[in-house]
Structures are given as structure tokens and as C-alpha cells.
Amino acid sequence: MNASLIRTLTVCIVAAFALGACGGDMDDLDQYINSVKAKPGGRIDPLPEITPYEVFTYLADAEGLRSPFVPDSPQAAAGIAAGGTRPDPERSREFLEQFPLDTLRMVGTLKLGETQFGLVQTSDGLIHRVVPGNYMGQNDGRIVVVSESEIELVEIISDGIGGYLEREAAVGLAD
Image (cartoon, rainbow, N blue to C red):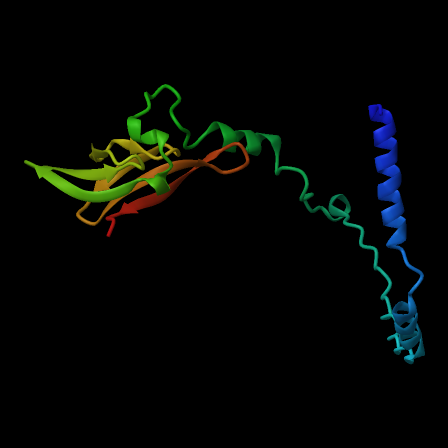
């Protein structure tokens, strides 16, 4: 026997068994359908009344108001972006600036002479010494104070409209 004949016979036998499973005994299904149809239908609540939409036309120009979709003035927008606080692109990056601030942990302090160092642990377990003036975190965080309980820093973050803001942050002593 060749392979195509065997394949054809196999398909025919499987089809015969599949069709044989489809019996005409559907009395239980008919009984269920009749019992569902015999139940009284439920009451459907009426649709809520829809209030008509009131059209509002914003006439900023006619009333002398500024449009909320246009910047105050091009000069003001340029002034915000051009002046003020900015990250220094020429400054060489320090090692702890490659880590997000929330992954750095203060694990202690060390005092040598008059200098107090903060001990910061990175996510890979290494401990680094920092002093005021060092940078850490990915937002140009400049350390301003190292105390026994925390390291305070000032980060430079984008304000979303082309400028930058200074934001205070701190890394507390880990428990």
C-alpha cells in the first residue's frame, strides 16, 4: 500500500468516528431550551434621558484673554529656556552619576580631620566616599551637605517646557 492510500483511509476512519459521535439524542437540550422559553421575560428599565450638549465657544481674542494653547509670548518662552539653571555639559561625570538616586544607599559616615565623608553603597555592593561638591544620581545631583543621618543634594531636572529646575533631594541612612 502506498502512503497516500493509507493517509486517505485514516482521514475517512477519523471522519466516520467524528460523525458517529454526533448522535440525534438531543432531548435534554430541547428540554432546557423549552424551560428557558417558558420563563417570563424580565422588565427592561427605560433608557436614561440624555441632556442636550451645550456648545461653548471660547472667544479669547474677542474678550482680550490669552489663548491657553499658545505660549505667553515667544520672548518669554525663549527666556525660560535660555536662562536660569542648566546642567553643565562640559563637566566630567563622576562614577556615582551612572546610578539612579533611588538605587544608592547611605551606609554611614567617616570623619578624617575636619572632613566628613558620606559612605554610599551602589546596587553592586561597592561603597564609595562622597563629600559636599561631589555629584551622584542621574539628574546632576550636587551634594551640598553630608550629615550623620543623610546626604542632601540639589538635582537639576527638566521642567518639561525646555527649561530646568533645581530640586532638593536626600539619601537617608539605611537601616
